[in-house]
Amino acid sequence: MVQQMEQMYEGKAKIVYKTDDPNLLIQHFKDSATAFDGKKKGEIKEKGVANAAIAATLFGVLEAAGIKTHFHEMLNDRDMLIDNLKMIQLEAVARNIAAGSLAKRLGYEEGVVLKKPVVEFYYKRDDLGDPIITCQHVQELGLVNEDEFKTIRDLSFKVNDVLGRFFNERGLDLIDMKLEFGWDKDGQLVLGDEISPDTCRFWDTATGEKLDKDRFRRDLGGVEEAYVEVLRRVTA
Ligand code: TMP
Ligand code: ASP
Image 1: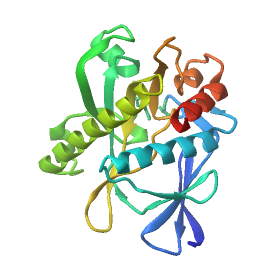
Image 2: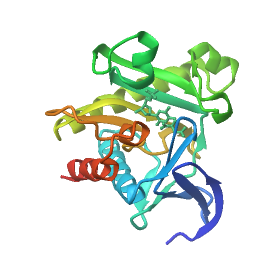
Image 3: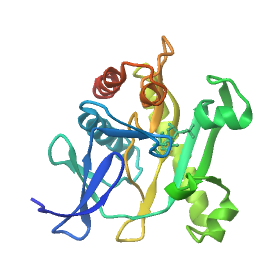
Image 4: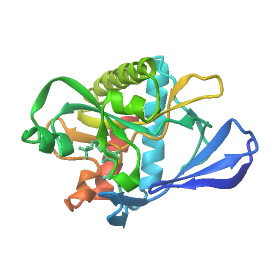
């Protein structure tokens, strides 16, 4: 049994702790929620429990499809044992249906089905507002080289494909999702962070109802209920 050690980092929705094994960390899922680069703050009751269970299940689905993730096991209902990755300062966003910033950027109505999935990259820098960047910017910044960039892009499409089908079978449309990757101790590229209603958009296939953090961002009500409903579908 690993021992939890000092806190390494506190983010907006999670706290990461060191353990007595340098290759392992514990990521603790909080109920706090922010939006718009932290300008909007709140609590979503039991969100941490729902997101931890949703993420654990999805990491299992991806592992079964041959995609490496940082997930080891749940230690309790909020604490996830993970690989200690050297995180890449990038957010990869895979999109299937126009919503949020893509709808704004391309002048599309939300809900327009894209001709084919799109993967975008954002520079993970809160102080810059996480700007969208190109492959060449990624190399200029020295985040990863061109081959690594292509691998991350291909892996993002694969994650989107596997999870899109998984959610489809559960009556949810995967609109878009944000992914983060890192390097493990053997230099392998591994999917990290979390996959949850905080980091994805899910719409009910039958009704179109939003079942994700947009309910919090846009004050739509029924926020807790949406997270519980996604958990129910994912673990059904
Ligand atoms: P966007 O439409 O606001 O760019 O968001 C695209 C997806 O990425 C959406 O599912 C929410 C997720 N996301 C995050 O996980 N973190 C963020 O900081 C942002 C802006 C979006
Ligand atoms: N912008 C993020 C979101 O809406 C959260 C934040 O940056 O505070 O998911």
